[in-house]
Length: 251
Image (cartoon, rainbow, N blue to C red; front, side):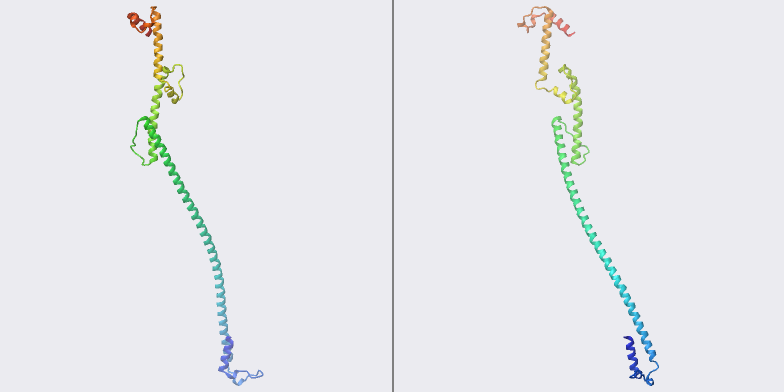
């Protein structure tokens, strides 16, 4: 196209350069610079062609880059979608963990409240039985820990009381139960001193029985005639003799 335009321009400027019919050109009208003009037009056309080729190459490179960018953008979009899905999964898992932790804390608080209530009940039972109340000098300001501290005080008092009671009951056991073996446990020992019958009255009767038997033995040893219908009358026996018999029995 550039060559054609250059030729047409040269022809307009030099009409004698138009070829005659039969291919014979009028040499008288052919300008001497026609070849130069055509060469210049051809060079310009080549330059334009090179420019267009460069632009075409640049366009091709731009197209390839655009395609590459599109592929990369798609990959990034896919990755972003995957990351978004991962973030959503993490969010759900975090929410589930928070819910589980909240439920665990609620359950733990409920258990602590129940334990505190049970310990306080035991503390009140100790107070009802020992009539001993305690006051914390340095409370923890925690209901559960404070209740445990009170329980420790009552436990210490109970242990000391049981030690003292066991020592005393062990000393009395042979007198009340001379034919029995002392139980190994404190509870068994304590139950021995709390039978259905009156243990004190029973021991008193036993002592009276021994006293009567001793009295009969003393009278028998004195070889005196005894009127058992008047055995309660102390005048039936000589006072000096009675004292001597009692003294002998004591020795």
